[in-house]
Length: 260
Image (cartoon, rainbow, N blue to C red; front, side, top):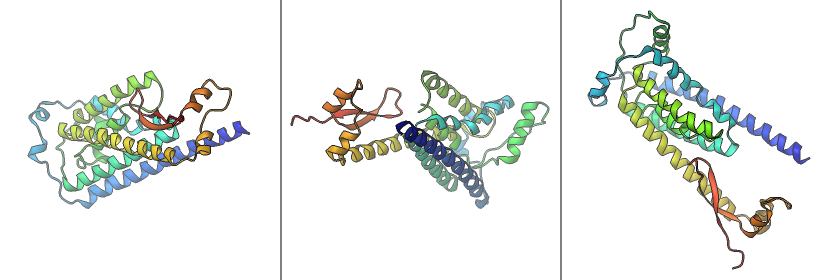
């Protein structure tokens, strides 16, 4: 019976994560293009174009890592339900703030003329055709990269690969003339800030939930008798949280003194 319940919970969690992923994809795409369509005038402000932007060459081959951004959230399906919810909330908040930025700063970027002589150039032309040159500040591409920078799934390999992958995508955004440097900087700051804020809120909610538990409910959260953690768990109840070594998932660290 216990195995059946665990299997059912696993299926429910997988369905929940898949459903949220599909809904977020559809909503963000529709809202993104609707926002650009509602704003009739987009300008290329001088303050957004730095002298470094003017010296960065167009690199059509960078379109391929740029395209990988669209599938970068999929590994989140391997995360635990709580971590997935936390990251999903951060993505929603970052997207909402980005949309506000697109409305307040209706900036656009000037794109170069491409002949389409190579496969990469043809792919870049396809990107230019369907992705308009506005809704750029702050860069939601960079914000999502910041949120995914330190993964909540996988092990050491994922923690090493994800920062590299996300960094390459951010560089590709500039090399394909999809974003200015300041777009990327603003997007990264937004993503890191939102993830930290949402994580702090989740930790506080989890702490408040545990402190409201009655003793018998708290006892039911402890490991089953006969496990290696039973004695330590019965000596202390977990009520405080802080990031783990990877800086991603909350880790209970504080204990109640039952002798008082």
